[in-house]
Length: 243
Length: 323
Image 1 (cartoon, rainbow over the protein chains, first blue to last red):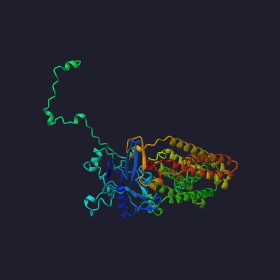
Image 2: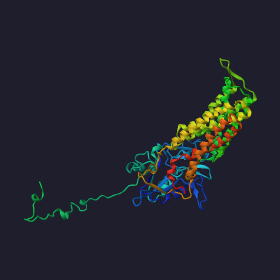
Image 3: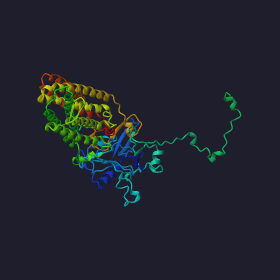
Image 4: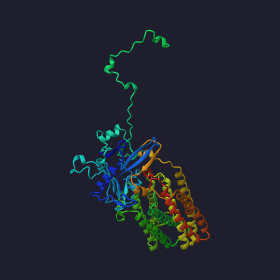
């Protein structure tokens, strides 16, 4: 079974919000209708987004790090938001594991958001239905696009390639390798939701150089070099050691 | 969580309606076995009509919670998995049987269906009342399980939630039954008043137990599990939107901690302590029963507001700056 997902490398993300704007642009222009905004040019603009980048400071200054944290629907393998939906508008696709909302069936009761511990769903205040990341389902299967473009909009937009997209059930896929080899982890594992999206941790790349590595032991200029002989009157090994 | 007034009125009005019917049918059951003098059919009939009025009020309130009320009919589809869907089925089923129960009393179409060996006659209204009782409890369980089944909201995820919905709804319903019988059948007032006192005491105990339980809850999700960084000190610098989002509106009650602290003793007084005193005094001065019901209902509105406001959703970890 296929489970499409994003793997987000927190070590690489620079917090530029390109994925946010690109997601908004693609998904507000699609056949499913706009992602509505309210008061977009006024003091307190608000709107519907599938994807947000948040920023956290970890540690105390000066021993602190800024962490940019892109956050969207995790397409859980056991999604708690789906069984609570009274109409069946929320569903998880068998064929690729994407969790979707049927905007034509949603009654806007918001019960699914209560059941999602990640706050991944956002209510569209104008269309009065629940919205969430679709993994650009209208794009990744679009045969009219070049194959390289059949990826979620956020993945295409990321300037640092912090976002990987693929099937996490295929052990050979790039996302599976990244999760396996670079310590991919899931958010809030305590709830047993088995999020499909994974995050790669911050990693320190340190170069450990020992003193004896500063000079090449096999430096050809030194191979033949002789240590200077001690003088006749200097103490020998027997004089200075206690053995 | 942000307490939605539609849901506050929905749950309290339904509870009162269910409780009132249960009170009426309890009386009818006592009367069947000769423990109480049987009342005229109109007593049960008009009582059922009053209960239906409350249930209809709750039903109307529920529509204000929906973004797309015109699609509400779809919500019965997922009864296999969703408690909300089950409630959507249980409510009209209960109202339908309750209507038949009341109509059967009022129209006099109440044939004896079964005669038990002891010579007891089981009427149609008794069978209908039995079915309606089962449905009333099913509706209580469905309503409460909508909240109790959400394992992330640990304040709700407890059998106490179900017990309290049953007890709180029944308490207000029996109090209303005492008011109703005070007007229509004064001789029976003390029966309903007595039960109202017992159930209000039980509800007081149940709600206090859940308050104590919730005060000792430790959150399972932390900032560390939310973003997966194992560091004891994590501070949110930006939440991805400056003007707020659905997440900052739906999951915060937006009232001060002082307000939250004040509402708890308020609802404990209004929903339990004062009605208990007034119900006891109402044994002698029935006029106080009406005051008891109104104050208890207001107390239950406050109780329900607190029930929602008290629940802390784990998504709030991602929205610590609510600017």
